Structure formats: structure tokens, C-alpha cells
Image (cartoon, rainbow, N blue to C red; front, side, top):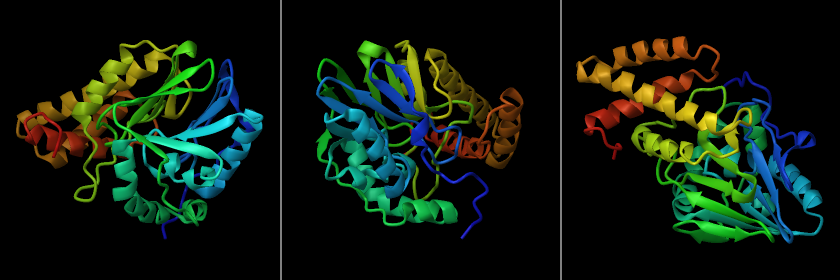
Length: 303
């Protein structure tokens, strides 16, 4: 098993940050494989957004949510199926109703076992958190979106279509102007492209750009990214612009018949030069690979 050179992927429930009335975030503190987790309250119900990595983290999140709810009904949703976002849902099974869009439910059933095996090999701290994981089966599966009434507050669960994954879903709280993006947006790091041919090629840079163009145009007051510091609408524009420049620099070189190996080398150097403070540089190469495939397909999403 590989060494794991990062802090243990443990959700800290003691540092909840209130970002609106009856709405808190458990921030990830820039710890790898820890997502920002939302807890959104209404008069009679509370919605949790994402679980943390594995059942132990999720039990801690559930305990926090239970205390926060003070007897209100609990719901759970996840922004997409990746392990640190959804692979703790089993902990909520007896206490919360779990809702996801259909494409995400398909991802969980079709690719969950493969991702569980892959993540377990990342290192002992990750394997420890994933020990005992059972892939969840959602209670409610929807197609075109879901308006969840929490009592005096309606939260919208909106599938975006394929981008970072097939089943990406944003969560909006209109009365508070808050948007949860999952891994469609990260703060202070390069966009995560899970481009692992031939095993997983569902990420689409082309479609991701379109999604970010739409989200950036909505001008949300508060934006909670999948990972990194909470921001505002400027974060969405920053991610949109990065994805555009990654596409443009990749495709310009492919138009000139530059080899993919050279494209990766040149574009990586350029992106690091333009964003020297950003973390997770290893995702640049994956993004270039995805966009090279889409270029070869005529500028459309790779099959």
C-alpha cells in the first residue's frame, strides 16, 4: 500500500461556520479527501450535503447534524458519488432520507466498487476511514431536479449533467443566496479531472465549461466549493476561466499537431506559471488528457 503523505482525511465537526441563517458548513481546512459539508435547516427538517470519507467520518457528521436538528427530520444528499462525498451514506440509513439524481445513483451502483478499491490503495489512513464501507442505495432518486421543503425554506437539488462526473449535482438555497458546488468548483487548487482511461472517462472538460458558464451567470452570494475556502460568485468565474484556458492552450497545440506528451509538458508549465499558488498540480495532466480526447472527437465530449 502506498505511503499517504497528507494529514489524515478526518472531518472536524468542532469548527462549524455559520454562513447564513440556520445554515452551517463544516469546512475542510484544505485537508485532502475532506469535503466541505453543509447542514441546512428549515422549520421542520434539516438537509446534510455530503458525508465525508467512509462510515466513521459520516457517523461524526450525523452526530453533529442530529444535535443541530434538535428533533427536526433529517435528509441527506451528495453532490456526486466520489468516496469523500458519498461513501459514508450508510451511517445515515436509519435516521435520514437519502436523495440523489439518477445519474449519480447509476454512478454509485456501476462504479462505486471500483472507486472503493482504488481509494483503499491510496494509503493506510484512507483505507482506515473506508474500512467497513457499504455502498449506499438512495431512498429517493429523481431525474430533473428536486425541490426539498425544509419548512419555510426550499432547497433545490439540481443535476448539471456530465462534467466532473456523470452525476454532478449542485445544491442551492435561494433565500440565502448559497450554492454548494461539489467538485465542480474548488478553491485554491487545480480542477480535479478524474480521467482514468480506460477505466473511467466520464469527466468532460467541454461540458464542464458550459456548466460553469451557467453557474457563474447566476451570481450567488456565497459559494461553497467541494474543497477549499468558501467564496462568492468570483470563485465560479475563476474556475470557468481556468477551464477555458486549459482547453484553449491544449487545443491550440493539438491544432498544430503537437504530440500529447509535449502538450502536457507545455500546458502544465504554463498553468503553474499562471497559478503558482494553487495546489494539486497533478490534476493538470489529467485535464489535458481529457481535453486532448475531446479535441480528437471534434471538440465534443469524449464518448
